[in-house]
Length: 454
Image (cartoon, rainbow, N blue to C red; front, side, top):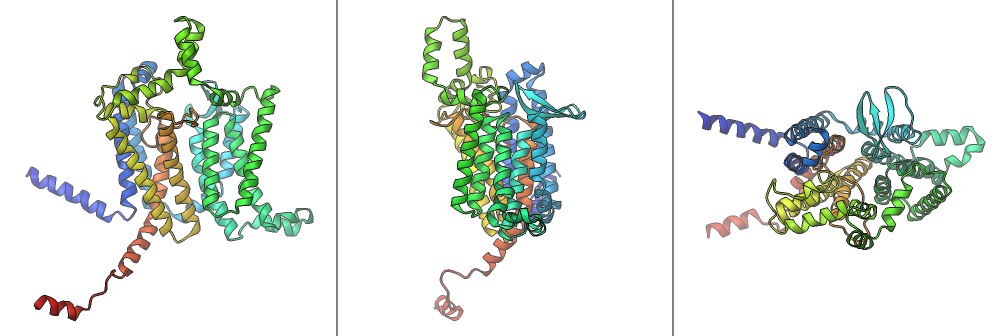
């Protein structure tokens, strides 16, 4: 009786997957990453549990709840999401991003919604007592917006710009394609990047890089991109000058400068030479605690790892469950665990590229491309920071769908839900092309029959 129940359950799951019309590879990658996150968060959070006055089991239960909500989001978007709806919402991506960033930058208190800070940096909105990590959502909103803007530019569909250029002579320049690109594409990129920089340099760098990659893939003229990069560099120079004159003291520009100019070898010399317990020794130890702890985790993990639950650096590195999750995974599972994580994200990159190629509409292609760049780009940046890759600044980017953090997990659940809903159309195209594909070598049916009978 039990065997029949097991076989019926397996049969139901198999039939469910067989009827799944989205891209199964992308779905399975999301499933594996979420399962890895539950185990990793449970094992990596003793310091967080102590800080919260809780225990790791409670934190794991919270992670399980977040994963469950994430799956619900993925399936709702997969079953009910429509490209037409995404396109309409994408038009609002920049407006929404700009509005919530204004609340942060100017530290506004609007009653139910107000700006909040973490470690002295304004990065969150407090909405009815709940913390919303703004930059996680801005990444997604701006990718969706750029997908719409690039598609609209290609189809010459900026109606308001054309209408204003016809009705108001002074605004006639808005009818030119270059100025439409400036106002609808380059200006939003610049504004959002600079506003994010007020609270997080790493997020500004990452969001700006993703948007530039999107417009490169989108086929925008290279000369225009060069002008935009030059404008960004000029803007950074102006912000640096404003910081030096004291106008932007509350920004994170000083943190960026210290990270760029930080010399870990010099800091290590101070740690070794300064009297233990002195202010110099404490400052040097705090600067090296996270990067050195991450490197120690990787070294001690070796090939096979220490085993699940046997990490020692989780008691020393404050945010190993977030910014240094990849190092933690290597310490417990070794290079085999690292290879699995890398394989999953590379598979996502390859599969996402295939899905983008099979999309019929330009908007679909750009959205899939941007979302795949978001997930894999953040994953590889996280890994580069963890292994202390030269010339890579110590940024606070989490490992998508794996690191602890409810806001990030929910945002990436939205990302995978959108990918799966768009992939339904792409899979139909792939299936049709496979059915229409001719064999490599044509055989005559009569000739084959004669050869086999002989």
